[in-house]
Image (cartoon, rainbow, N blue to C red):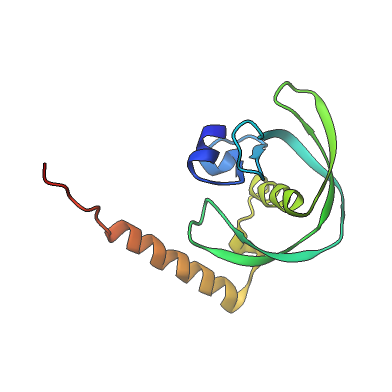
Amino acid sequence: MIETLHVSDGVGLAAPQIGISQRIFIACPTMKKGEEFVMINGIIEKKSGTAVANEGCLSLPGISAGIVRATKLRLTFQDRLGKVRAVELEDFFARVIQHEMDHLNGILLIDHFTGARRKELIDRYTVLKEQKETSFPATRIL
């Protein structure tokens, strides 16, 4: 999962995004190798504050939207060795955690929207996906 996260230039990756039905996610807000947090069976114990910020998602490349999230969290989880940890997080790191927890709960970025805004995001993703499927890489003649 860590390798997949870095190859994709992401800041977080949940196991269900790559077909693993486990409550595990990786968070690496700095995007620096070696600074990843592996979080297993995470539980958000407390949330406070709110802010809107643009989010993207590795599951929906090319799509981004402003999402309301808590600005501070208290989270308990097991690390990769099974040790229970508790952390308090703020701002961008807290946002990453909430986004990945959404994935563990079956929620995608577009699920935060209804009506016309949701349709707009889905239509945009569909167009981008079709463009990617119909584009061909340049051929080199050797």
